[in-house]
Amino acid sequence: MFNYRRKLPAFHERNIEDILKRFKLWKKFEDGELKCIICECVITNDNFGCILLSKEGTVNVACSNPECLEKVYDVIN
Ligand SMILES: [Zn+2]
Image (tube, rainbow, N blue to C red; front, side, top):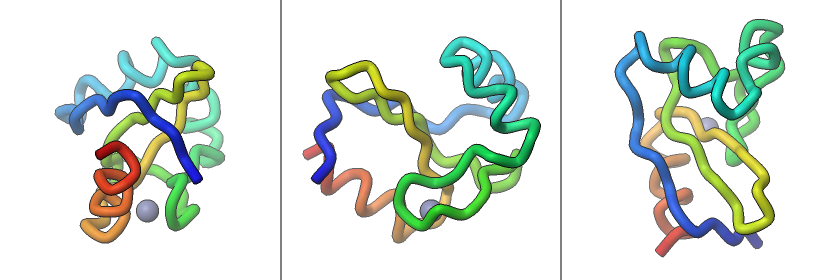
């Protein structure tokens, strides 16, 4: 279903802005439109889990819910 070549680990809160800006996701995040690719909950400072980069260059994020991260790991490995 998903095909990701690598995952960036969860970042300390103060780095989220830098990371999201780097992937041009900051606006979405600020607007409350950045959603977990697994459960589709809105990503906030409190539940940011990890960033996923696809081979096609698509960037997605997952929340910090253990169930979502587990699924993300399954996808990657
Ligand atoms: Zn989730």
